Image 1 (cartoon, one colour):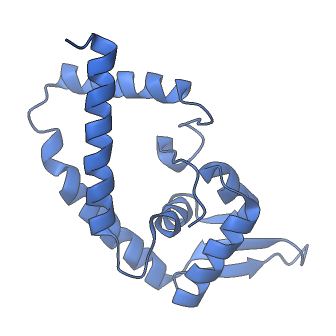
Image 2 (tube, helix red, strand yellow):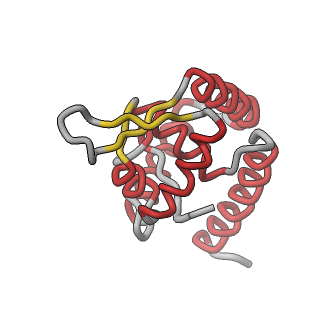
Length: 157
């Protein structure tokens, strides 16, 4: 018989597998998960430089540059050059990118909509508190630095 920590780890693993599979199905055919994560950051923050995105996603600057190049080619983001410092380059969603990001957010809400309906307010508060506490202990992640409390792991797809 599993102890509580082992049971929780088993449930978390099963939950993550289902979310990842559902997340993969909801993405546009021409968009990878890391590209979508960049679009989410830009949707929530407006304008960012590549270093800010690299820090938020815990990936390398060259990985962000590669992902940004692909998103620019797709017309989902654009590069902006600072008038005061021509070396400073910022990224921003285009109107097309904003539409795609919103469509994917709507799909995500559909994917997760039924998960919470049977939970009481106390259960929801306990779940939120537990997840927040776990995320602060997760190696290399500070969930409160990016995307309104969401933080994602390393990737350079």
